[in-house]
Image 1: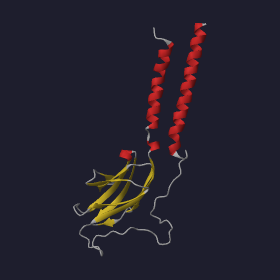
Image 2: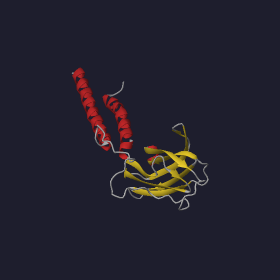
Image 3: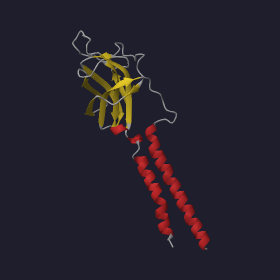
Image 4: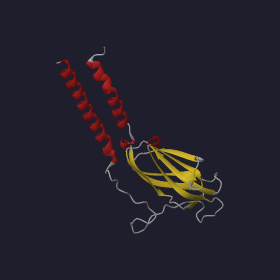
Length: 191
């Protein structure tokens, strides 16, 4: 016969496991990842300069160029990793060894918890750029956002980083209620 204390401990194991999963969820990682340059449809040669920003706590960022075929991105042919020191980042990927064609820029933060893709980047190493492969960042002169930037869409649920702690709190309250009802039913049947 199993004691009621052992039953209570066994009943709490799924709650502890669920709480651990919720705490380790992506809600506590980086919140958003944005690539400012290059924009979709850009033609590059030589060094591909990548600029962007990341909000939230992120430790590392992996960037790669993957061949694009019929709108799908393949495996990256050229990759680079950077450790983030702040919200803004700038790095480069060499494209001289890549065959001419259309590629996807794939950015992955925090070991896959957050990612973004910029498609339709054309690598044309046979093109003679006026500054010999130097890619200048694009930015409007008047400080306003250009039409090619992706607007930020607010979530119906609000800030997603709040969902993890709310789910954890709701799970804890539910566990206390179930435990209390179990003990109450046990005492009632014993009496």
